[in-house]
Image 1: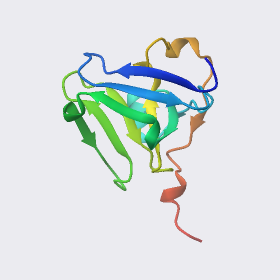
Image 2: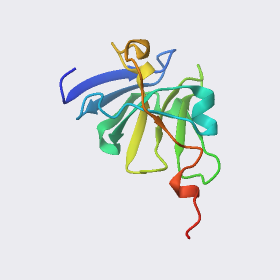
Image 3: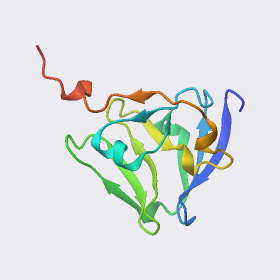
Image 4: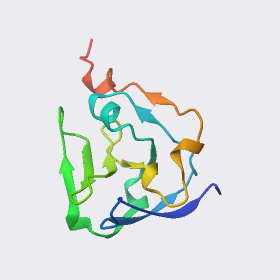
Length: 127
C-alpha cells in the first residue's frame, strides 16, 4: 500500500459506505484491551477526522458511548458491524475498523500493537 492511499469501506450489509484517506498507509494499526475493544476484537487504523467521509447510510449509523462518554463508537443498525469511532485519547481522530476496508484482510497483517485501554491515561487521577 502506498504511503497515502484512498480506500473505500463498508459495513457487512453495505448500507453504510465510506471513503478514507490513509495519509500514512497502515502505519498506525492497533487494537485495544479496554472493555469495549476486547469484546469486539477489531484492528483499527487511526486517521484525522477530515480523512473519513461517509458516502452512504449515515442515518443508519448507531452511536454508542460509555464510561467518560468521550469516545463515539459507530455501528450499522442493520448488520451490527462496528465501522469506526472517534477516539477518546485523541478526539481529533477516528479509529476505523480495517475489517471494513476493501482489499484488506486483517488476518494477513501479522502481529498488531495493543493499546492499554484498561489503564487509559484519561482515567488516571492527577498526582
